[in-house]
Structures are given as structure tokens and as C-alpha cells.
Amino acid sequence: MVAYDGTAYFGFQFQTNGPTVQGELERALTRLNGVDVRISAASRTDSGAHAIGQVVSFTTQTRLPASAWLYGMNSLLPQDVAIQAAGPVPLGFHPRRDATSREYRYTIYNCPVPMPTQRRVSLWVRQPLDVPAMAAASRSLVGTYDFSAFAGPLGKRNPRRSVLHARVTQQPPWVYFDIAANAFLPQMVRRCAGALLQVGLGRLSVDAFRALLASVKPMSAGPALPAHGLCLMKVNYPNFPLGMK
Image (tube, rainbow, N blue to C red; front, top):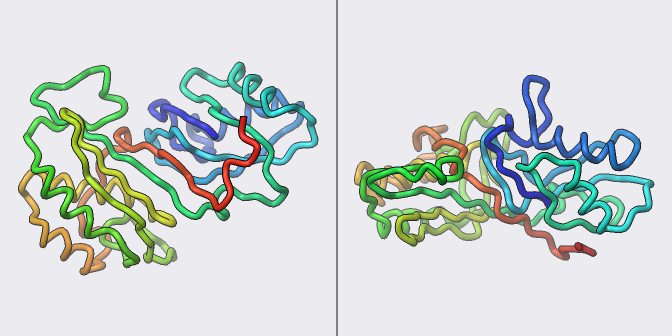
């Protein structure tokens, strides 16, 4: 299990035009393993997004105990990426295909003045927010729907997703949007958060928010909020963790 501050990275997935979390993990694994290593991940988080519960797997013939992978990797990784737990999984385990659901959180710092120490992990909103209205709108997302309105370009993807829970809560000055689903469309969490923010600002009614979901018009919910407020919290599996240390 991996945690990272995604500020300095062009997302999780390897790219040729900039640093990625996958690139850092594979570089460290190759040094520890002695041969090139390729990993699979549960989620391809966006550029600038964070994680505390990303799950990755790889195949190796190197016989090291779980503690050696845990502490050895952390000695080789940059300070903004860290292994939280490590252990063996069954051959054939795939962190994306075997996941039953993923949980994300979008964090808003709702205060008249900014907090510089939180600017990399939350979105600052100075105007007061109607959090009860945001909470009511968020509950509309629960169920299996066509989420085209709340997604970026889909290509040939099936737009139907099953949201298991969605809620907006407040611990002043923080406002949290938490959502869990079997899978997510591109930018789906950030666009849902963006529409909920419009509800909180009084620019969109709860009924209008529900109408967006029913419309299934691609990208009609509006732009995605910045990625720095987004964090992958947890990935769920039928039987997990397996041998985690």
C-alpha cells in the first residue's frame, strides 16, 4: 500500500514528459530487486492528486521478507512517496481488476482567509458554503447511473458506475466530499465535487443538481475542481490485506 503527495508528479501512471509516482516506485523497486520491475496499480490518479491508500503489485523472484520491501523501498523513495504496508498476494492478483470499490475524498478549506500550509492538499474557498444543501445533493449520487454529465471525455468507456456512498460533511473550517464506487470515470470525482461546490455557493439548486445526473449530457455538470484537493483514501478487496506488514 502506497501513500504520496502528488504535487510534483504528472499523475500516477508513467509518462515520458514528466515525473510520475509509478516511475519513482519502479525506479526504487528495480534498485532493490536487481532487475527491471513493472507494477500494476489500483488507480491512475490525476496529475497533482494524492493518495494514502493506493495499492500496487508486482512479480518478483527475489526472496525478501515483507519488512525488507517496506523499509528498503522507503529508504530509496523520495520523501513525497512512501510505502505504508507490504506483503505477499496470490499469483494472479491484480490491484485494479480485483478491487470491489475505491474511496476518494475531496477537501475544501472554507475560510475567509487562506491557510498556506494546506494549499497543496485542499481547495481554498472564501465564501460561506451551504453544507446541508451540498450534503442533500451528494446523496443523489448513490446508485447505479450513467455518470456522463459528471465525467471528462469518455472515449468508448461505459458511462455507468455504481456509487456505494456519497456524503458531504463539515468540520469547520473543513468541508469534505467522500465518495465510494465500484469504479470511476475520468475526472468524475472532481466534477462531482465541482457541481456540489456550486450548490454550496447557491449557484445551483439541489433539484438542478439531480437534473444534471438525469440528463446524462456529457460534461454538463461543469468543470472539474483542481486535483490538489483530491485524495485516494482506500481500495477495497474481498479478502485484503493479505500478509500486510
